[in-house]
Image 1: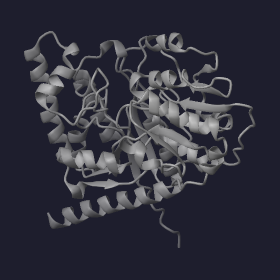
Image 2: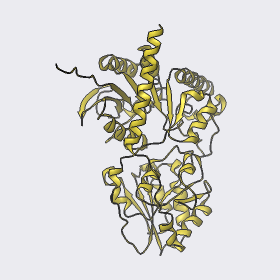
Image 3: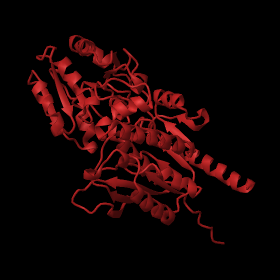
Image 4: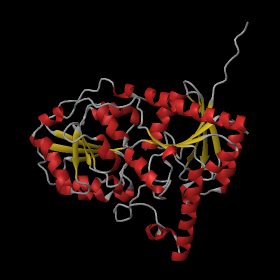
Length: 418
């Protein structure tokens, strides 16, 4: 008697960008998550690209390592405030995709520059939906709860958000109307999500304060492909090598790091900054007062182990409430101590004087002092290089699969009742 073939569940993953075109934390995590999930489920990814030389809303479908990728072109020249969260053309494209793909469950990573109405479309088709929160975008259009002057924001309020985003509008009344629409839309969308996953307790707390019910949001940190970090050995050096890896944008605190490093003994240390230097940030080079600060340019994530082998201490000086920075976990996997701001999810990961050092957010003096601790006491680098537990992508997927099955079971029970 022939065994009946069991149909694989189909998961539709939605993310605002995907490698190799986008390599920020949420995109890299999604890449590893989907590749591991594809061992158990059929995976389709719905995402966007920004190609000014291609027709807007052009759709390209491809298969990468058994994963179906649907990329919709949304050129950056067309951006407005509203287009960051509402796009009727994108909504129509997505619904056609949803009907064709027929997923059992939808897992959203980010909706920025797609359209937030995706959630309503999914619920209309009675499909369970999960959102992994990577930042504060579901309450803040900027995503980071930080204002233009880099001061921290406590949360959304119409007047405050209007002032923060006024540069997008021609009049105050228009700005207030748009912000009001954005905040109302968010509340509706959040009601239609079955479950939120927060990778940090700080982020979870912020969303609970915002009004997401406690039963709808769980804490679960990221998982990592540990194979990429196996056997990393730190190359020897006569200097203490501080490193920064990531996007070079103001909220990441690069200017703070450079100003602090300018004040230390350059004969004993060097600072290597890995990441693409946008034209808007070229002034950072002029800020450097020493030749021991090196801008290394963009890097291939596949070569991260090589980069980490040439770093003695990682510095994460962000001035916003970071969620759960991938780069901190990656440093721990390579047994590299981390110096980071005592802020948000960063402070959750670094155990002060155990696997790194915490410094006062925004303080050049305190960051300088923490770097000098390592310079003057190199032994501390080894002392703080103890093994720190980091979840594997396999553990992560095992937990996520349980969540998928739980939501599908809940859906079946509702159907039986009705």
